[in-house]
Length: 438
Ligand code: GDP
Image (cartoon, rainbow, N blue to C red; front, side, top):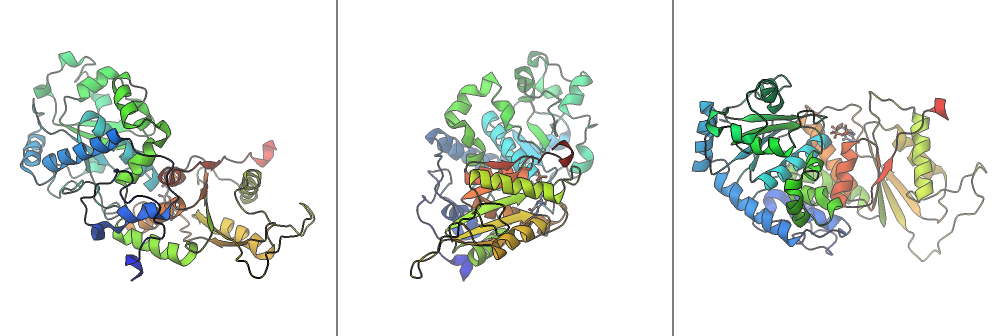
């Protein structure tokens, strides 16, 4: 069966330089070891220190994670409403907010926070998030169990929440000086509200010392707040050892943490094999037009053409309208195999795909190569509350990340994740200038 077919490329090592633990059952999560083989070899290697820290993290997760006695004890404290003075295991619970790309950025950041602060990462997975990813830590789970004392995450964690660190500070419930804060007097958990902005200033040194006293922390965010850690002297040395190549932080975190479930991987595999596998080159093009910032079709399309011509990203066509060059297409000799480039378009709408596909249908390319254009779906609107919709979105992020060149839309986290996973040079379509200002 196609799902069990051997990976296409074998030029990358199976465990990504030790980033992935070999302790998993391959069939329970086929994407984990298979997906690197679908990409060009990554230009980045995880540091040996990162690998060592991940193995140590996994051991801690097994010890403190759900179902063990230490977890039960910590949950009892949470239920009691009081923070314990000493606890062998401390936790950070991530709760999802906003679209899938935003979720992956904030979840990746939360994991890095857990690594830096020796906490155990747990995930609140509502039905629309459940089943998207495989378990990332061997021998344990990252999902909070069904009998977890906090159930109403949406109602409990709002900007008005009295357990938000920002609100606690404003109310004088915690002081900025950790020496004045006694751990036993604290509530059982603290909520870090990191939506869009960092107004609660949780990432000052003094705040971190107070926050370290809470055994339970809940984070809600839709941004890549990992960037904040790089501004903190306390984490500087550790981050330097973990990630000597600063531009590859998300790349490594994402390749470690995010593995599409077998259901999502089925979508990825089937689509890849049917539409992309035989191409000599794959170009991904993600067009995201935000409903709150509409851009006219011709304006956006013009930007795509300008950018890809300028940077040589899409094969050029010989135009018949005499507007461009007049060179004839190169004709490959009958015997030689002609190069095929696959263009993968992802977008909520089909209009960009239709235009691009039409251009390659009606015109030869300058090099004589063939171009096929595909778009897996056009869902019309974002439906983050629907699991099937999120599964397709994740599949498309993965398919984009398998492309040799990826062009994405500015301000779209969906595209950023694809770049990050691929570890390729990011080509980003800036918002086109409005026609009025041209
Ligand atoms: P951002 O809003 O562009 O930063 O990205 P997010 O991923 O956070 O939110 C956008 C959401 O809209 C995605 O998660 C999908 O649910 C949906 N979406 C946007 N563009 C696409 C697309 O090209 N394909 C699919 N399948 N879904 C998309």
